[in-house]
Image (cartoon, rainbow, N blue to C red):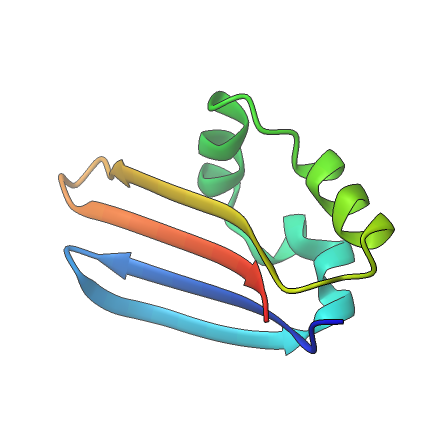
Length: 85
């Protein structure tokens, strides 16, 4: 079982955020991500709630949950990675 939920945000290859939460915070991952990131994930056809359910069923094993790469409205390359570690 993983011990942590990790979230990293990069803009133009510069780390802007690196957050670590207890693994069970995955159950509240929607509240830990910005709405724009949630929308982008769902635009790609990913069901966030289903990913959380799968993590729970699999016993919260270490796995990458989401990886989003896009361009912000300010023209910056943004990468958001969310995983269990």
